[in-house]
Image (cartoon, rainbow, N blue to C red):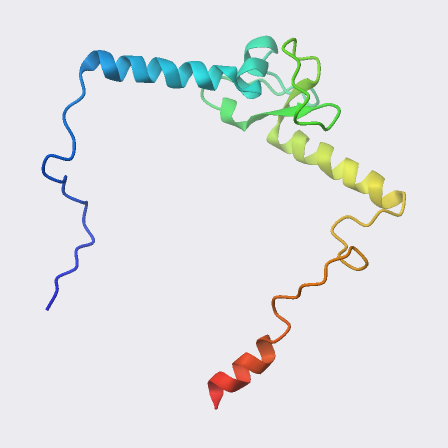
Length: 136
């Protein structure tokens, strides 16, 4: 009888060798540099850690709840001066996107409406028949 284990995996023999401390530090610095290039990190450096809508202030402890909103809605438009970004708390960011959806719907644009959208595939079309076959 085969024994299955749900515990941690044991390292493979000869699979890895210990990293030198300077290699670990160099890799950590590269990862940090890549992260700092992201528009979120850039925005957090440029703008105050305050929600631009409600004024809630953030610290290192809760900065994960601060998001970057693209003012023009284009996530590819990331000027280095941060002019297309504003820091919003998760609640105000959600509200901002909800307001945008409400605006579209007020103009007769149905968001998420699949009717007439050109979708032709229905993955569940034959589901009822498959369930009946399984019971017989």
